[in-house]
Length: 392
Ligand SMILES: *Cc1c(COP(=O)(O)O)cnc(C)c1O
Image (cartoon, rainbow, N blue to C red):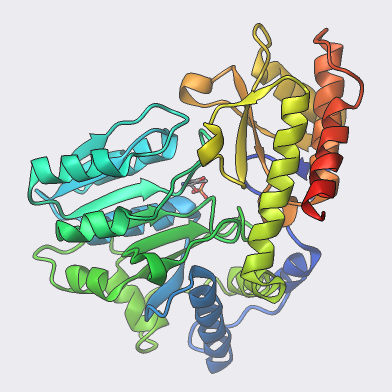
């Protein structure tokens, strides 16, 4: 059997994203034992970098083995106990998953439904919490990858706290691409994944818990359903001591360390501005091609975009052609957008001008091949005009 040698593809789907060469290099560093003080130094630095990226001083901040779903599972399983009432701001595939996981923890799960493509209304959430009375926690997805909606987080923590509930936020598709000021907003639990806006390889997730959330976890009446993702046990190894829990994924930790360094060296404001400018350029291009987004304009995320295909065009066929003819990976539509949308991620190292131009020109050529009339280069030229207007 030959050694693996995958053909590189341009990763512009809803994750994984492109990986910076220096992150691949970091992976090749020597593996160290979980009991080696040299590894502990790297771990401490990684925690520090993570706190800066989450914009928090929360002591309980660390990476977890497993992809973004491990972060979701950790958040839900540590906070919830059987019988707790848990409210999920719905409106997409990943919000529904949070609800599904929470059901397994024995919680009484209540959804605040919202049409796909829109964000959860703070007023509707407030009314639901008032109606329910005793609510343990509220969860929302910051960037809902299935719709491309960026949930405004503004007052949600205050609304939850007024009812003595915790706010859990899924930042898997936003951390490192859109502003997630954990302390400023009073978010109690946030989790993310390595391979989306942080531009690292898949395999790690990360969580941060406020003092309030730590207190809730510490005073549980029952043990959490997950031993592997038990925040209390993980804390004894990652934060307060070095009590063996599981073998540290050292290679992945090196890669995350490097990916976070790249984000913070560029500077969070510059990183967010880059995502915003490239997202605007993509949207201008899409608009010039006569297409529209699944998300309402005012809540469009700068990281993931669900682009609706022209009537009668099967989005799965477009997606396949983008791959077969241009080696560009995009995502298919989910839920009500299945067969109708393709999802374009411009996250982390994928959020670059050249990639916006590549995907727009490939999309033009694919749709043209399917007989859909577009003025030549309309999308690409609109994107270029968008950047020009940004720089004045
Ligand atoms: C990708 C994603 C997840 C799941 O992450 P995996 O890395 O696939 O486990 C969870 N939530 C959101 C919003 C995502 O985009």
